[in-house]
Image (cartoon, rainbow, N blue to C red; front, side):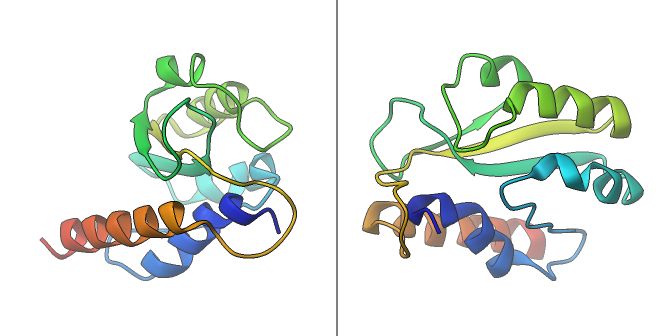
Length: 132
């Protein structure tokens, strides 16, 4: 519902069902899914979100916990840093965030072209890696 903020759910939809991958679309309240995530006993967790990083729209970065403190703002109410600390305590997994710079997070449908292009590129990389 918030244009480029749809990047995460779109990526989950594209890569769900890949081997050794559990994908959860946690929507606007990821803290509600900690129990479900912990039940999977993951070694690694990748959180995907639109994040204001000061980059060009569609550019992305993989962030570790220490980077997230400095990363800017997401479109969620809960601090990503607090969420990651809580998730880390519950799972003991290595946690990363794939942050994509949004162009537009106003209400409406459809992602900007630059974010769509990143979605396709990242989907391809994930599919390649899971097929290896």
